[in-house]
Amino acid sequence: MTLPIPKEVLYGKFQEMGIEDISRTTIRQCSMVGSALEEVSGVPYSHLEFGVPGIPACPIGIEAQKKALDAGIPSIYPSVQGIPELKRNASRFIKAFIDIDIDPKGIVPTVGSMQGSMTSILECSQLQPGKDTILYICPGFSAHGRQPDIMGIKNLTFDIYEYRAQKLRDKLESYFKQGNIAAILYSNPNNPAWICLTEEELQIIGELATQYDVIVLEDMAYLCMDFRKDLSVPFQPPFQSTVARYTDNYVIMLSGSKIFSYAGERIAVVCISDKLYNREYPEMKKKWGIAKFGDNFILNYLYVNTSGASHSAQYALSAMFEASVDGRYNFVKELRNYGLRAHRSREIFDANGFRLVYDKDMEQTISDGFFYTVTYKDLNNRELLENLLRCGVIAIPLNTTGSGQSGIRVCVSRLLTDWDFRQLDSHLKQFVKLVG
Image (cartoon, rainbow, N blue to C red):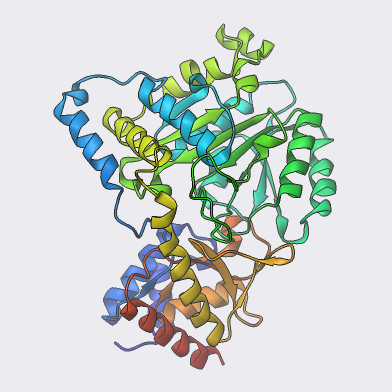
C-alpha cells in the first residue's frame, strides 16, 4: 500500500484499538497506531514520538556496572539511601555543572526521574494541611501530569505560552495566594517545547516559592543541553540555570537516561536542598513518627515504593558522574548530536510550510536540542496528527502535554542517518500535497 494511507484504513485501526480521538491518546498509543500503519503500508515511518536516547550508552557506566555485577552486587539489597560513592560523586557533579552545594545525604537514587517525581509529589501533597495541590508549568512531560491523577492528588496546569517574564509572576501568584499549592513542577530545558526559563523567570519562581512556602520540583532530564552556550566545562561558568539560586525550597531531579544515554537501567537521583531535607513538618511527625522531609522521603515514601534503585546501576551512574567531573568524559559534547539533528530537521519542516509553536525564550530563538514543537496552518491537533499518520509521520499532539496550542512534539533522537532526513522530507511533502 502506498502513502497516503486511506482514511478508512486509518479509522479502522483506531476502531481496532478502541481510539475515539487520536489527539487524546498516550504516547504509546500513538506509537502503536503508527507501527500498525507502518506494517500495513510496508513503508518505514518517521518516528518522532518517543523521547528515547539516540546515542550509545556511556561506556564508562557500562564498564562500572559490569564490574559491580562481577563482584556479586546482584545478590545484595541496595541501601535505600544510595551507595556512598554515588551520593558523593553526584554532589560533586552538581557543584561542577550547576554550581550548587548539596550535602550528599540529600542525594538519593531513584528508579528513573519518574519515580523521583512521583515520590516527591506524594510527599509534598501530605506535608501540610490545606496544601494538597500540585501545579504544573506546561507544556510538560505528559506522564508527569498523570502521576497525581493516578494517586488521587489534586493538580492544576497552565500553559506558559502567554506568561513569560514578568507575566509569569502574576500568573503564579494567582495560584500561590490561594494557599493550596504544595509544589510546582516543570522541566528546564522544557519537554516538549525546548524553551528554557530565563534567570529572571527562575528568580520569580524561587522568590514566590519562598514567600508562599511552595516546594519547587525541577526536572533536569536535559541538563546542559541548551547548546546556545557552552556548559561543558566542569567548575567553570556558565552553569546550568536553576531555581536553586533563588530559594531553598527545591528538589532537583537528575536522570542518567538522556545525559548519559543510560535509559535502559532506569537510574536517576533526587537532590534535596539541605534546608528542605532537614526541615521538620509536624504533620509528618504525627503520621509517621519522623519529622524531617528528607528522612521521610527515603525511609517512608521511597522505601515502601521500591526499597531502592538497582544496585549495579548505581555504580554505573556514580562512575559517569565522576568521569564527567574529572574531565575524562565530556557528556555535553556527545549530546550536541541532538542539536545538529534538530537544526537539520527544523529546516525540513520549515521548507514544507510548518512553523515553530514555542519559538522564543523572550527575544532569543530556542536552542536546537532534543525536542521542538511545530504546527501547520490552522489545522487543529486531531486534523494535524491524523493527516501526518496517513503520510508516514508518528508524533504526539501538544494538547497531551498540557499545551493550549495546536501542533506536535518532534523528538529528533531517531533521526540517525541521511536516509532518515530524506524520508522525513518525503513524508512531509506528501502531507502538504494531501492537506493543501
